[in-house]
Image (cartoon, rainbow over all chains, first blue to last red; front, side):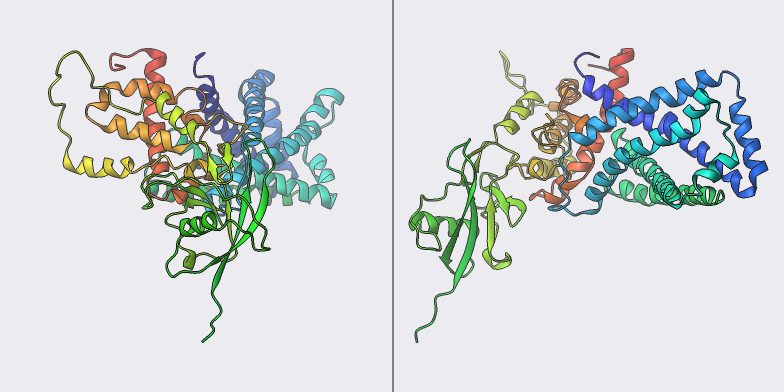
Amino acid sequence: MAGNREFFHRRLHSLLGVIPVGLFLIMHLMLNYNATKGPEAFNKAAGFMENLPFLLFLEFAFIYIPIVFHAIYGVYIAFTAKPNVGRFGKFRNWMFVLQRFTGIFLIIFIAWHVWETRLAKAFFGTEVNFDMMANIVDNPLMLIFYIIGIVSATFHLANGLWSFCVSWGITVSPRSQQINTYVTMAIFLALSYVGIRAILAFT
Amino acid sequence: MAEQQKTVTFIIQRQDTPDSAPYEETFEIPYRPNMNVIAALMEIQRNPVTKDGKKTTPVTWEMNCLEEVCGACSMVINGKPRQSCSAMVDQLEEPIRLEPMRTFPVIRDLMVDRSRMFDALKKVKAWIPIDGTYDLGPGPRMPETKRQWAYELSKCMTCGVCLEACPNVNDKSNFMGPAPLSQVRLFNAHPTGAMNKAERLAAIMGDGGLASCGNSQNCVQACPKGIPLTTSIAALNREATVQMFRNFFGSDYSY
């Protein structure tokens, strides 16, 4: 693949964003939703994930390595663009900018989130459960930070699905792309509902 | 009846050499009915005096056909890249601001060097090779409906407006831009051109090609000829997906 590294990297970036990172996000938000049924339900679901066999391998193969590649290459993509919504304020151009903006924000958010809820456990053996999250979002600023993070993630995934469909040649005609805009925005709203309900359940 | 002569104000971004700093000059030009931006520039050429009465050098720009088919007179007019021949003064908000398309190297004033587009066309082999040592005879026929469809893509005049509108075409990236990509679709759709389809796909699957598109879709909004650039890009993405697997696994069809 020497001659077309950029093509390969862009396609890999696009694919990894959906599989596995996108699928992981959906699973993650669904699991969190158990918090709306009370601390017990959440702790049980989280415990199930924690006790998966080969956990570290699964985490690295399906989350850490793909998301790190997606993040690093995504920063490169974001910073090689020159946003021009001031001159061209059309819908898709706004989505283009928002996709890059949420991407950069998510790196900050996810780094913080992983530190707080995963690395702290790995290094200091902090217990990860309902009470821990409840403690975090007890601070209204952290709650806002988390809500913005969740909405950024659901937007980035939904809009990323839209461009995935274009980049792989699934939606070619303008009409199919238009319909896919509605579909992906519905996905955005649905996932945001799940995510926000879940985080509010900890307050 | 001593009627005040109606005038039009232009603020023009000027630059004396490719490397010198740009600066602005304001001109007040006598209005004529139905005048376009080129007519105003010609007026400045005849009488290169700024609004303050200072004598200056005539503004440099490029033009050729004056009917929006050659692409030479593209510039940024009131923030939008477009052809100055079809930019009617009556339809523009005043003062009218003219700037060169800075995506390209500025040669002088409003004149830019669009060589990168022609280089890209060479890179993607945007032609149909028919030369040989003997007469190859007529090529395969093209259905009329397809010809009409292809005609729309062939309207591209390499004017550079889509590159100027694209956020991914800039000095930080080597993206060739939408125009040459759409030409690949045009030549790959041609019955004779299709014989070299894989070569063109290979070219746009290289660095600075198809994959650098970020789907902001400004190009299709900005294109003065209404070329379905984003549809071309998505269609090429589909072909590149197939070609990618052919390249990787090998195929009897990858001629």
